[in-house]
Image (cartoon, rainbow, N blue to C red; front, side, top):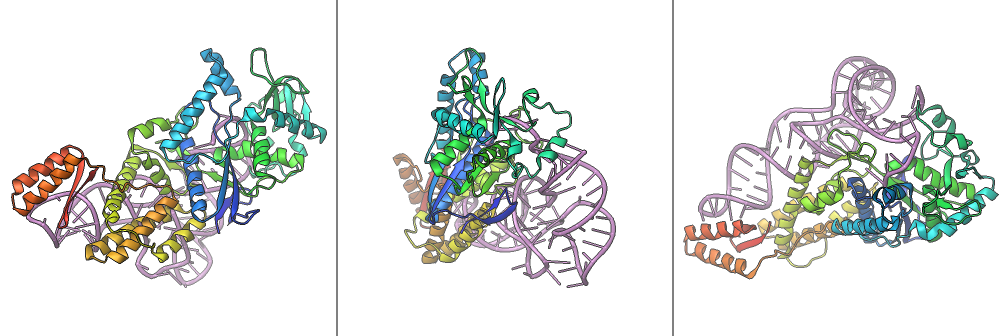
Length: 453
RNA sequence: GGCGACGUGGCCGAAUGGCUUAGGCAAGGGCCUGCAAAGCCCUGUAUCCGGGUUCGAUUCCCGGCGUCGCCUCCA
């Protein structure tokens, strides 16, 4: 079964399923106030690969991924642009799912919105106050982190260590809080801001609360796996967990975090540094599969640099696979080579080792090509079938269709005829014409194969 | 100041106490081809520096240098 690195225990260990054959996964989704960037793309692609692989392995996956549609940044932008805040959230959400569709990320099983769970969040905050884990100040309600004994489990630092550090950082809202690490569960609204009623005053929920309420409600206590980018480890995930612990509830059984996207200088792409690259631009300029390929070639926990050179290499490697797919499609159906598939599941089960898996794909492609060259079609077919199976399991779709119009097909036939009659100047002319129309022309002894570049 | 990660061949990027030390992209040579393309075969200068443990370290330990992350909104 699947083994994954668990941030809480700092070791690769088996993902324990509450119910055999079923997994409940919670993935922290976007705050919808701007376009999706490369970091969002990485996270969604990594978990899309995980989801597809688990499904491939016969596990029923319920993937819950939220949309944070109420937040200070949304309110700020609405004020700045003088338009309704819901206008921004609706627009951004549709852009989000459109982009995800383009990079082949399947829609989550459930997409809960923070604004749909305000009543439940208020109820949770009431319970937390009742359990003496939260307190009201003049600007909101805060969780008292000192009431959570193992606070710092994900940060891997004790409360004291965290407080001793920080240098000259300014602690947000320090005047109102009992501990520097206390965080807002409920924020009182200022006039004109969106608000919901609560026993303590009108306001809006704090960011860390929605995921607790939604994950526990949709997936239940002690759900199997909680995912997100490494930047959410602390404070977001730590604080989600703190609330659940303070409520006396069992939270996620396993914590998975993906590494950062870094810029050309190796620095993390971050909104505050302003070095984020838009995911939409990448999709527009390159084969959308290129980003998935780049991520498959990098381990999910390692930082990944997205640059022109990287993406170009990925695009070319995909082109090679597409060429193989067209060639292999002529072989017909076959059962997949069992040895290859066993190797594949072994490396994937080991902390989702996609670099090994994709290397296996390329190795298998080479073996299949060799078999085809030798005319060993049965072997070639079973290897090719394994290639398709592995690619599908990782969400990498190969183009088996050649996308050739009737005219080009006819020109290919004329090309073959010209070659047969040794009219090579005419053959070269036809090939040049096809190439100038954007086709890849492969002349084989069995006839000319034409496909879209 | 506290905690942590990393430093691999032209580039990207895995893995590993020795055994043939991935894979992709790029480069050179060859086979195939009418010529190409595609495919296949072969090749090249790799494990930041200095100590230590060991029969043996790129891999483990210590020190150094360098890069990065978290401790604050962020996938």
